[in-house]
Image (cartoon, rainbow, N blue to C red; front, top):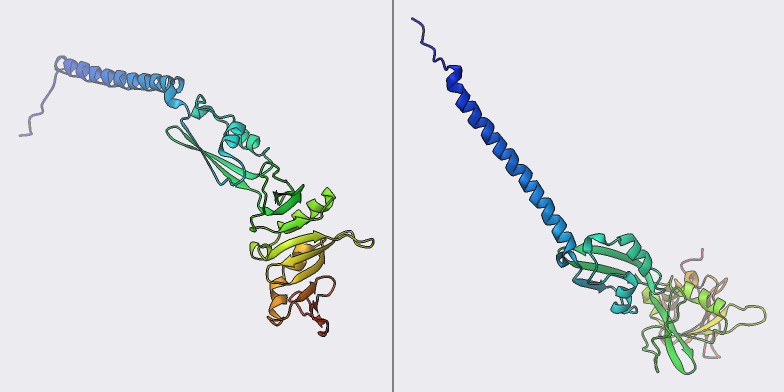
Length: 263
């Protein structure tokens, strides 16, 4: 004999189907209510002080003041952190002449980070008995007046024409820091046949006679030139078409220097 099959009548299944439908409806209702309250919470959050900026961190700045950067960003503690347009903030801060690049980031829940990269200082210029830092883009920081130069960058002296000063700073910013730190003073010495002529006083006791044009390329080999000279010999290193050394000692003849850039 075969096994007896269990037969469930439709009348018996109806209560079960109703119960399942009720459970599904309850789950659906809970799901929709959860979404509704979640959206309400977001709206309340966005319209409340909880979404406002509370902290603005400025980093990477040596010349630009924190408060100056914050004012230029147009971000305040009444600003909604989600309504900040980073590209507009970057554009506004880039108008500061000392700023080379800017990066703006959100740090939840309410902090804005502004990271700056400034133009490097390439020297000091002297005006009316005071010293002012000058940057690689030619910007003179007139608000940072000093009685004495700090000695952390060369003095740039005698440049009475802005065009030549701008060309000089443009060359200085190309120099490696190791070579820039060797320069004590740069004097503009224009002549009738060469308006770009300059004379440098170096921290290691040498002088360098050169020109503004292509100065960075020619000074790049300065360490290798000095390495070929005797430590006790001091004089003028002429860097031009061909580099040569002229000793301060009149009895010493001029020596041709074979630098690494010549064949």
